[in-house]
Length: 136
Image 1 (cartoon, rainbow, N blue to C red):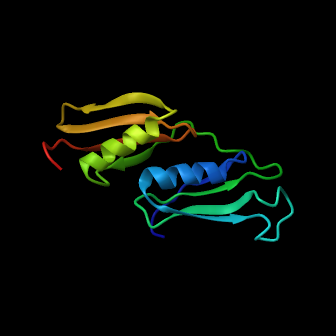
Image 2 (image 1 turned 45 degrees about the vertical axis):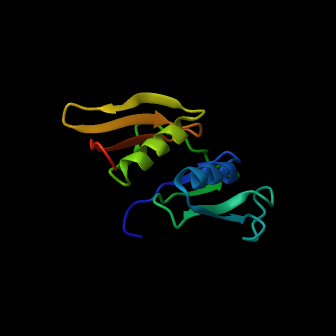
């Protein structure tokens, strides 16, 4: 791994959250339960470690156990600027918006690019953008 990777501790929703992102970004999901890791600090089927596989986004998550605080996002955005084709980035923006909140619509900017921000249904804040081109 050559770059920082978000690792979310979620309130019992890691399976749902990683499955959602796997579907949005078209990648696989690998999940390991507390039982698989011989842990007894939570429900046996809780996610002890999960991650996205073979996709354009790297993300890890687990279910918070014991006194671990659950993920809360303030003052942080995950940036997907120019990481795929404009049509793919538009699709990601649309999918992440479902059940979420558009902070700033995906739109043309004075400097010739397009970008926008969305907080998805799981609380992650995304900045998505690309250079303005007529065709992909």
